[in-house]
Amino acid sequence: MFSPLIEELIRALRCLPSVGPKSAQRMAMYLLEKDRDAAELLARSLAQAVEKVGRCQQCRTLTEEAVCTLCNNSRREQTSLCVVETPADVLAIEQAGNYHGRYFVLHGHLSPIDGIGPADLGMDLLERRLASEPLQELIVATNPTVEGEATAQYIAERAKAQGVTVSRIAHGVPIGGELEYIDGGTLAHAFNSRTAFFPPAE
Amino acid sequence: MFSPLIEELIRALRCLPSVGPKSAQRMAMYLLEKDRDAAELLARSLAQAVEKVGRCQQCRTLTEEAVCTLCNNSRREQTSLCVVETPADVLAIEQAGNYHGRYFVLHGHLSPIDGIGPADLGMDLLERRLASEPLQELIVATNPTVEGEATAQYIAERAKAQGVTVSRIAHGVPIGGELEYIDGGTLAHAFNSRTAFFPPAE
Image 1: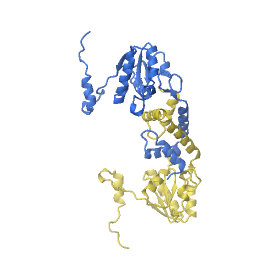
Image 2 (image 1 turned 45 degrees about the vertical axis):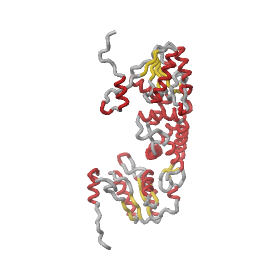
Image 3 (image 1 turned 30 degrees about the horizontal axis):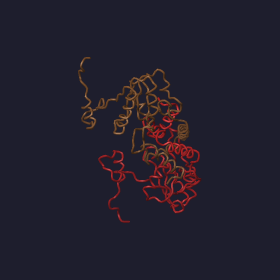
Image 4 (image 1 turned 90 degrees about the vertical axis):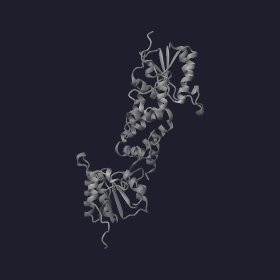
């Protein structure tokens, strides 16, 4: 219906997550009709980012520098390291604002069925850091999925072997959530992991 | 939080219609983490489309060719012309599938407050076509908004002056719509424009 270049642009826009044929068409029309400057800027940004953005040598998050700003920040606690699956997880934790240590990004989780083993998740780099840095705690914040839990288990064992204290972030009913709408698996976990209301004095 | 190039990419993605900060971040992460080929393709498509896509010399729709496929198609009826506001409207009408004439795209509507007058909508080109082509009917399919109606009125008068029959597409309750959920303006219009159930025999 549209000319070849426009059809190609619509197809290319459909690669974006949660953009279907109608949205892609709307985006293409918008850019070509109303905002060609934005389209040019987006084309340049995409090309630049694809060319230059790589992984931080220390924590493997996405960055165009050799070492990312977080790893370079000397005010971050050097004694704790938080392992997450994706760079977006780092952002989510930073926005929560109560963790001040550093991160390690796996870029996924162990998944033998997809051929993803420890090497793909940078486990060798993580083990080198566990061995060489003055870490007191390794916090495992992988997702609470089957694969995320298996990955957490694997990392916990490697860290224990190196003599580092390992912890897992708590899972349970979200703050502000209503029990009525929480799934059974989460509720069961919340019951099993209940904590004493009046912990015994030490 | 992210490195400068990634922040810039997220900002650029936010120019897309209905993409907010969270979606833009998700898109950037997806492209950089999972599909750099798609990102490169999108960058190229955008640059190409911005550089090459212009307007059809006859109907003003978006195309990289001098004259678009629809205008070039000799099997389309030469006797009727449909005036629409945007290239997306052409697509919508083509998908409905019962109009076989040609189109004229205004790229907007008359809007004195935004400084958009007849010249911006290609009225001179439309008038030349009205004068020189063997048109029997001009169908005005601008949107049923205040500006769309004013534009329709303007076009109808110009076409009448040139001796061309002008019609306006029908407005009323959409097929499959439920009266209960239709706004008052549309219902009032549907009552005013009611047609005889048994039209008198001619």
